[in-house]
Amino acid sequence: MHRNPGPNSGPSSSFVNGDPVAGTPGTIVDGGYMTSVQEELAGFVEGQGLTLDVADNTQLQTAILQAITTTGLRNPLINPGFDVWQRGTTATVSAGGKYTADRWFQESSLIGNSTLTTSRVAAAPGDIGVTLPQGTKHFIEIDWAAGGGGGARGYLEQRIENVRRYAGKVLNVSFYAKRKNAGTNVLVIPRIVQNFGSGGSPQVITTGTNQNVLTGVWARYDTTIAVPTIAGKIIGSSGDDWLGIRLEHDIPDLSAGGHFAQVEVHVGTAPPPAEIRPTETELALCMRYFQKSYNVDTAPGSNAGAGVLHGHDVSGPNIQPLQRLFPVRMRASPSVVWYAPTGQSTALT
Image 1 (cartoon, one colour):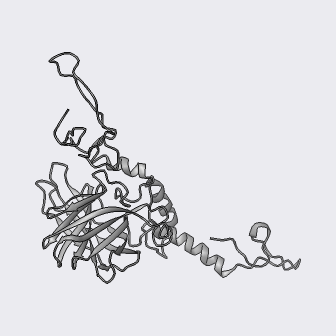
Image 2 (cartoon, rainbow, N blue to C red):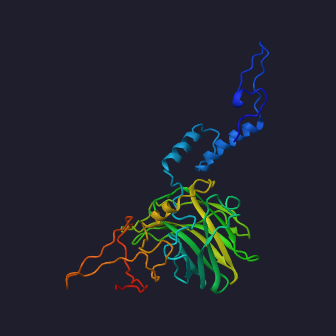
Image 3 (cartoon, rainbow, N blue to C red):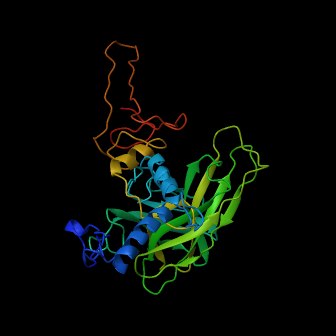
């Protein structure tokens, strides 16, 4: 944005009224300035997921109020930049899938049978603020060279609590991506999964309007998905229903691989700028679903001293309590695994 550079401006590019009687010329408004003001305002409105409407003169007000009420968590995805990996910063995934980066479930064999590895990779400094958003730290690398065969399909998915959320809305799903290896096409198909929980209606999968073939350079891809209404559906009573954001990816051959960063979901048809939240905020959000006493990047079961809880019996046969308070309240009663300091599971020493 800039101030009006037109002739006859006052101090600090202020506008001056002309006076024909006195022979005082008025400020001439520059076309580039008017375009700048237009695009700043229109860009903000569209960035809040609204579609410009010539008949609606309240859109700027609506966009401002919407921005205020999001309280800094505009993107409902947790760990969208793949910074937090409490289970370890690399994983091998086979049929049936597993969680890799926090909140991200990776399946290797949606179609066919394949094995892959996922890893956290630091973003190259030369890409940050150029081909990747300013503030990007990491991306996820999915490498199918670990085994299996071509022609299979996997997916990367985050499951958002509450299938009711966004029902009947139009969502924009965007992400940055590139293929890992030159000459190997990787097809990415965004989908929405509505899972109605235990005892609920069968899940519904809806495909986005765009299918994306990754190139060898970072690019932002986006698609629009109309989320079906849930009218007439049965939602299970166990509280385990969810809405999934799924990025399906083809596995054309064993040399294939893909890089993904900064996945965003917003109401509307246009993607706003990526929301980069502090890592400590993402970690706290992740800990609602998974947490440990190890250091944040140390995989559970490692032979590591940090995070060991100490206690001992000081009164003969009486058992002394050993407790650890969860720093973040968890979504549901968790399953707990104890490790010995040397890494053996279900063991106390």
